[in-house]
Image (cartoon, rainbow, N blue to C red; front, side):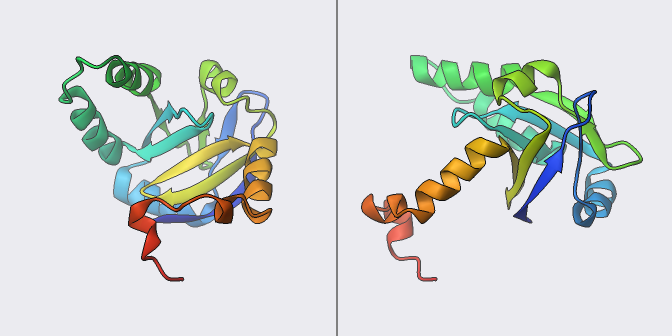
Length: 150
C-alpha cells in the first residue's frame, strides 16, 4: 500500500525521484517496473506494472458502445507509458504526460493505496485548501463513505 504525500522535484530531463521509503519495495516486488497514465482530474496516475495490467485488462474487455467508455479507454490506455525506476530511484515522465498534468519543477506525489497520484504542486494545494475550507462537508458524501467512521 502506498500512502502519504511528498513534494518531489522534477529535474531538467523530467525525471522524478521516488521517496526512499518506497524504492526497495518497488524494486523487490515489481522489479522497478511502473506505468504512468492520465486521470481526468488533471493529475497523472503511477501504478506498479502488474497492478496496471489488471486495470488495463478490465478496460479492454469493457463493452464500449457508449462514447464516454470509449473516451476513458482511449485516454487511460492511449497515454499509458511504461517506465522503469533507475538506480537512483528515478522515473522519467514523458513530455506529453508532464504537459497534460501541467507539471513543473515541484510536484506532489500522493500515495493512494495501490497507486500514486502525481499532481502539479499548486493544483494539489488548491484541492487541500478546498477540502480544509469545508467544501467536503458541504457536499453529500458518496453512499459507500456515509458509514465510514474515522
